[in-house]
Length: 111
Length: 111
DNA sequence: CTACAACTTGAAGAATTACGCAATTTGCTA
DNA sequence: TAGCAAATTGCGTAATTCTTCAAGTTGTAG
Image (tube, rainbow over the protein chains, first blue to last red):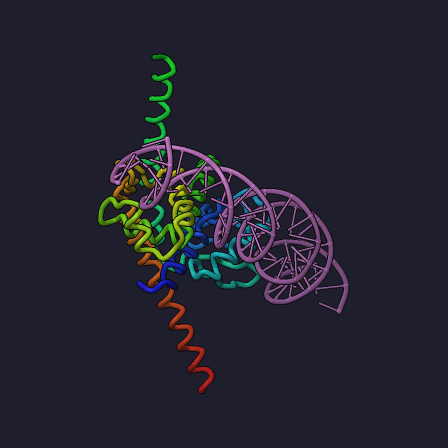
């Protein structure tokens, strides 16, 4: 596999690697939303949100369309949902594994 | 949804956001491998690989077990494969979309 | 117990990325 | 056309992350 492809994949994942960006993608799973609604949902400054939206836009993960004074964002593909589901599954297992470890450590301390 | 959960999700994705780490995960999809084999496959210094392996280990995405003088790495869950497949699908669509855009730009230039 | 191989860890400088504030752009409306 | 609302952009500073090289473990073989 050509090296630049790893680069592209890595950049793609980095693009998702921000709490606000994740939050936005989750909100957009249920359909397009204007920035105004996103802003109301995310507890962040308008400029911060706008910057993170720009990151997602440049990566091609979301699209922005102007409708009068407002800008509406949407997922550029519904496949994002599958990705987030996979991620949640892995995270669940990993955290469960750490929970087990924690339990073991506690047992050890009592032993 | 609690804020720290977004944090956890974002960190998870950031963990994947490195070419070498992606490469390693792809290699491990076919089964556990000793560092030696990973090193032979990835074109990087031993210390670089080791550092990136440590990142994956700390995140709980891979496990390391010592077998004599060698250390064998494995995916901590096979679900990683699903995630990589989802990612590839999205990346394909996004790049195809950009390809279309590129085609349009070219057509425009000729128009 | 010396020496070598397989890995890992530490640390410093370079490069990226994030955050908050101010300044702009764009569209609508009085 | 003045003014306001909705978004975006620019920029300086702080925080992370990367990269490379040197040093340190751990295991095994002579």
